[in-house]
Length: 192
Image (cartoon, rainbow, N blue to C red; front, side):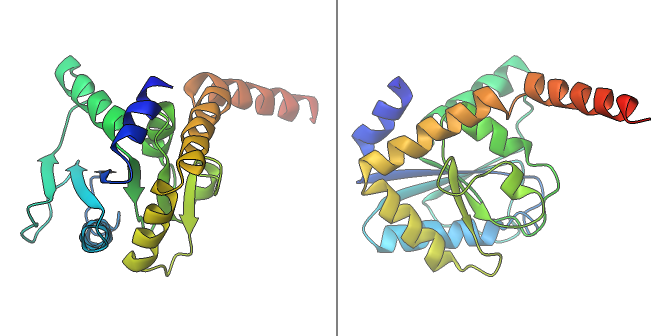
């Protein structure tokens, strides 16, 4: 609740986007940068932080590139926790995704995700519950429009934040995953 209130105090005048991915092209990095540009153009003071990779091209002044952050080190873990805690949205316009652990991490911090409906993404991001899943052919204009629409509606934004945390507590965590796997194994053994 405290983190959500801190974010709400900054809105709608400020938007902090967080992109975490190691493959710039496949994860849709250029779309994230263009989304930030469009939001700034729309009058929403937007900053984009990129973690995990470095773009090939030069980035505008409203984009911060951190490169790889090792979450196995205490320093890296603290840095990532701070980034998630302060992010307004987690943005990952991925073109292909099998397992999106970063979506679970965003939900753990109550950060709504905005992404494409592709691969296994909808297993992690439930549209309208803990984020927004756009059609795979969506353009940066659609990302920017949806983000602006949501940050201008504090109740809707809060609901997505709380929905994300609920998703994390009930299913997007290792304990829930392990229990589901054990249940599947038991079911398979009984079915012999």
